[in-house]
Length: 136
Image: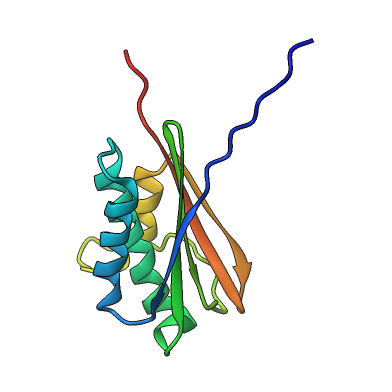
């Protein structure tokens, strides 16, 4: 009988004050944690989008905080941005080609293998998964 081996990666986490200047710090944290990685640019972009959403659409922007959690396991990245909650459910909005804002979750949906959220008005985590393309 073959025994299954389960490998778990220890996630890296960091909390940031709910201020706009902290979005750049969240991007830097993501770069440092991931180091050289084929998915680095995509991960940094999506963390930036979700941190911005946390500030603009949740209680985080009213003196709260957000947390970035990064779990790298093999060729897969699972990243979550936790906020202080909102009455609204995270969902992509209607695409307005004239608007310069409001596209964060559309970008996440376009780039990530999958994404989702868990939580409520007291706190919510929006997460995404990126997977390195396999050799051809």
